[in-house]
Amino acid sequence: MNFIKNNLANAITLGNLFSGCVGAVHLILGDYQTTAICIILSLVLDFFDGFVARALKANSNLGTQLDSLADMVSFGFIPGLAMFKMLEPFGNEVFGLQLPVEIKYFGFLITLFSCLRLAIFNLDEEQKYYFKGLNTPSNTILIFGIYYISQSGPHQVPQFFNISNFNILQIGLFPLIILTIISSWILISPIKMIAMKFKSMKLQDNYPKLALLIGSILILAIFKIVGIPMVILYYIFISIIFQKQLK
Image: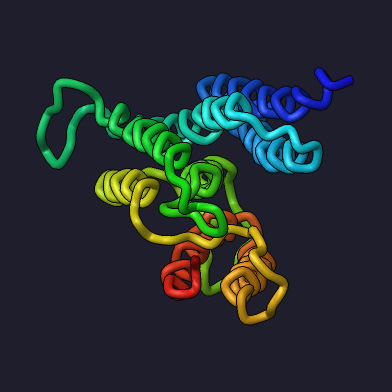
């Protein structure tokens, strides 16, 4: 019985890893819809492994390391691979220059910085009620969300924001390179990010969380699927606004 209690959270973490592996394979094969399902499953499992560990008082150093290793695949490799796929059509020519390798490999910069971010998080004892830098699941939602929208055809969005013919080639190479660099940097940036962990139940202590929750619901209600990566941009924006209150 103690064996099950001590390892249930670890089993859930390994489920996150398995889901991430399946998602990566399907992304390589071009089946982005299955990858989306796998990412959602990994997000759920990533939440519940910590919840179960705390509920059963089964926190351990092994669980901490397993969690980061699983996240490295689900929320490190997959977003890098998504950017790889977005950069793939541009070949090896960048602004008129011929590169010795195709520019698509630049997308894995996100994977490298995701790894660095996870390692820093494991050693950082400050990030109890907030994150320092964008967490890897949020970064995955941002990058993969953009890729998913570019691949999945027309979307019902407000008329003033019509992107029904949206295609990744229309974004252009330069914006994708900038997105890759910013996405990589913000993972290890000193910017404090809101974490949905409650230090107290006082209303004034939870204004950032309420602003994030209400704003995210409104964005998704208005923009639907297109709003998914927009929620992450809003998350970054609202976190910067409330910097001084995050502690």
